[in-house]
Length: 259
Image 1 (cartoon, rainbow, N blue to C red):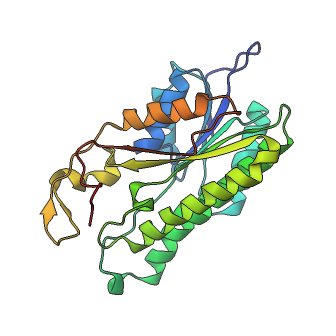
Image 2: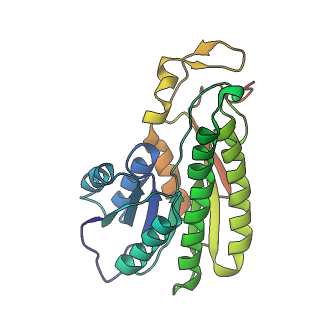
């Protein structure tokens, strides 16, 4: 665990947890929140990338790097316990940690690979949402916001992506249930479905990726900073308002009409 920065007392900044904060969209969102003055707990499986995110965010808000495997309940409990101890409350969870898994034909997908994707993308999101929900429900003032990182795959699959696609469809159900169960406690939940943001995970879009018709094509990508600005907008709304679902995608990606 590494802490950088200092918290001010009067008008204390809002507090966020960002999972998968060591790279890609998670890092972009963490940096955008920090620049906006938020205190951000950076969660991820490897500490060095989290510390690099914290270093990049140094000129912004207070950051706290916490090594966390979201598939492990004890790690998740420790994460939210640490947030409570250091910041005293939680205003936002960006549920972002995820894995695509191997792009192989359905009949070749190993059980272990299926389980790994489900454990990270779905069970990990549930465990973090549960931890955030418990903290938000009990704090004073009560309430907060959870934003789940969905995907355009929550609507339309790519070839050879059954595990990833199944978890992203399930994420939509998780978002709706969290929205319903959180109403009485001032906990809002929304989902951002992202298409072709330029990250390590989408690097193959630039060199060519298999399409539904069997061809391989290069796909347009967008800057992950555009996703981060959208998350910041969602997070900055008063709790009386909520972006339930939004899609941010590279304008020319082959999504509308996919398949």
